[in-house]
Image 1 (cartoon, one colour):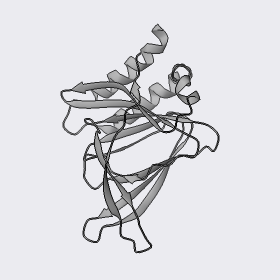
Image 2 (tube, helix red, strand yellow):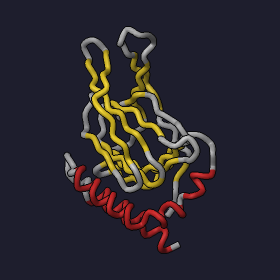
Image 3 (cartoon, helix red, strand yellow):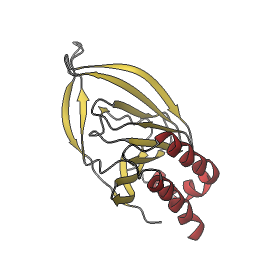
Image 4 (cartoon, helix red, strand yellow):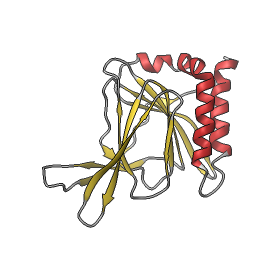
Length: 192
């Protein structure tokens, strides 16, 4: 258990150490978390293997939390082909890194005047790759597991508790999007 929990401690320490500022250096956090994931991906994938086998749909698991300054770390399990709706992050900063599998992240530009969203690009993440976003109300994206057969696992670090957020739906071809409040559902807590 010592080797397996040490990678969790390493990831937690990186996230907590690099998030002490009001505006954390997310690029540095992404590099360090990515390096740790590349170096210990087999250990972490083995430890989290049961999440890939559960086959219970999209799940969010708490890995670590801190209250001052607020930081939460989660592991998300993505069923084959699963895609989130376009969503924001409640104004929090965040970092997402792939542990196992591959994820596509499509970013959107939000226009609050005409309530439209326009795709502004896609990023593809493999094991150890990370992407991040600043604390802003305008950041929106959609994520998708690229595999049709395997569950993907990702590590998420947020500048607080992502308990509520907005998901965006497009009811017709008008280009108009409707924001609907959503609650984050937590499947459980992972222990190191």
